[in-house]
Image (tube, rainbow, N blue to C red; front, top):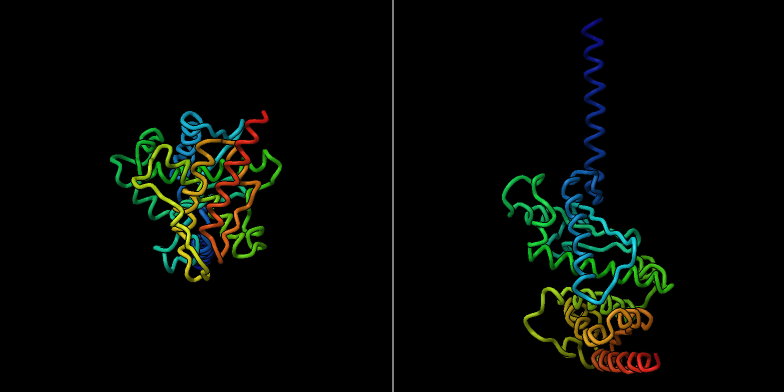
Length: 272
């Protein structure tokens, strides 16, 4: 009887352990943190807070009182089948969280000497590769905070993006990524200047558009003079005035948009 009871208990414990492991695996396969990276998330959240402070000190942009930003580590943003095509980090507008893909971030952390638990946020702030990511993603948060302060609501959720046609969908990415790239450049300047040729001329199809070139490089060129000359007011203007990335004349649409923004913002300043 004793042997049987002990064996039953062992079988029960083994079954519970199997269920727990299966639950963890399911959570990880869905990109959930499951607190596997508690220390990484803690220290990255501290770095994000320091980055926000640094942006406010070195730029004319403001997050607003009480604004917070936290880090979350995930295994993958998709099914994990093609990690090279996945971003390293993504800002989630719904809950003001930056999700970091665990493998590249763990590799970055491994370059630092000593235990992770002795590594502090100030030391990580000196890492240029991480700094570029932090400044870019924090700038997305900056837009989200500004949008809500202006009564525009959350700056585009996946659900609201799905309702847009292709030209408006791409236009949102151009303004968003361009703003993030410009703010990042205030600490990490680009080596080469960009121009309107980042946008295709003539008629194009979705398959012919280089998303990264248009959104990041083109977006940077588009918003740079607007944000450089008008700061926070310029950022609010581009959020209030959607850029439509026309497939039958995207380059000219970008040139016209930039001219209109600068003209209207100048008039607004003159009326003050």
